Length: 263
Ligand SMILES: O=C(O)c1ccccc1NCC(=O)[C@H](O)[C@H](O)COP(=O)(O)O
Image 1 (cartoon, helix red, strand yellow):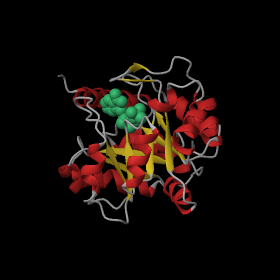
Image 2 (tube, rainbow, N blue to C red; image 1 turned 90 degrees about the horizontal axis):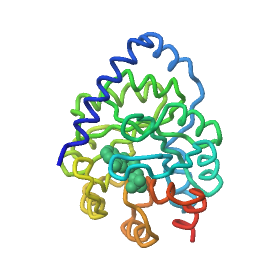
Image 3 (cartoon, helix red, strand yellow; image 1 turned 30 degrees about the vertical axis):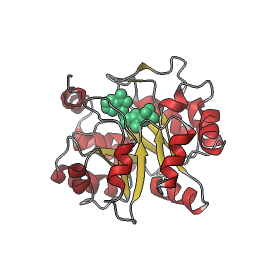
């Protein structure tokens, strides 16, 4: 099995090198720092929990390495408004072009179509991408502990927070979780998908859960497809979800969200 994560990482370094030539670092940094349009990603999740509701991060994803094209009729702004109307707390928008057919314009369009905070869902390998994210109005960035060192994650977290963005740190095993818990972000994502083999098991969340302090918000990511999956997580006190495919494959992603979480 080829390691897709390593391939993605190599592509990202090439992309960043090209982006730095197209828009110099000083310029993207100035754009990021001038962008005062901020929405609080963590507060949006906490508000749902305070109202005794699930915190749903609804993903806008056209394709993926494991599934190919998930949704041919892809309308990011419409999907965002549909999610917002049906109880999502936040958006997650793929901006990776090569592997997910994403684009920064999808992030901008989705966020502009509603009032929800948005995660730039991408593979952050270089600080340049954090400034890009804020320049594009992202409210949160993803750090994948499988490929980032702890010093890198600490640096990236500090930059994201200084720019007013939240950080979702993502783990898949105990070693990655130990590193993630060295960060200050309350958002700890447990990816049920092994990003190297594509194998999905909800036991990943259940197995790591007990090692996460109660002041963190555990986000269960990937493979949430059925109401039984939602109930299993809620029975284990996990009430924050990052869901893509189960919504994006349905004619109305928003109605699919409503039916999965609110019956
Ligand atoms: O989804 C993939 O195939 C994939 C492959 C390699 C790296 C990341 C990948 N996915 C990112 C995600 O984690 C998911 O988009 C997200 O958690 C939503 O998952 P799902 O609800 O199963 O679409």
